[in-house]
Image (cartoon, rainbow, N blue to C red):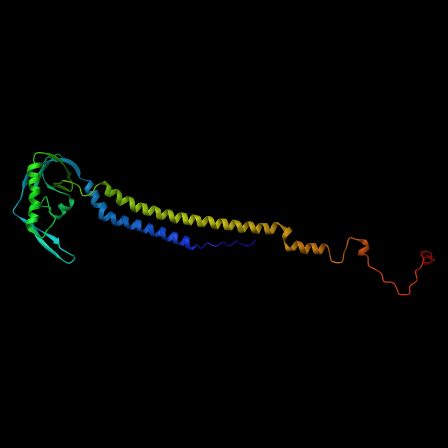
Length: 262
């Protein structure tokens, strides 16, 4: 029996679907790595800080000035100065005095100061921003207890006033890359499965057609040749028509049966 050949080539639409799925898979993996290094790691470190109750111990403003970089356009940059503000608090987790920082970014920018103002070209604006926070913590927050975040293992001498990242950042860093990865995988799998089912259906159809051609002789050309062999031309069922006709001579005289016997 001859082998049934079926085409396994993908159509243009199926080829585009597979390419789209592979593109989504690559984007999901790449974004997972990028977001993991840029956002996921700082978020996990920020979430390791435990909340604690803090009270202000002292508010100091040393004479030391620090530089910051401001921008005034696409190719315009410069430096200006701002005073240092130090806020020391007592936290309930360690029962020790620690330096308060606004968030993780300002802790990285200047570990010696509690507040880093938005850098302006005018030094007086930077100074006014620092003095406003000094008055706020000296007069309004000095006698109150507020929530701070403390990490005993990483920075036992520093506490944070608020976190830069929360659980929503962690959710977005994991959710969207996984959605892209799963969607691309689903598109590829559905396309491959649909093509596989189409190939199987085509193979079954060809096998069915070949089976009917072998086991249904009524419509085949061999039947017609067999019928012609069984019923050759020139034969007829009528005996009168089938018997060969005799040609008599022109001057033949009919003879009676008795004369012929004698």
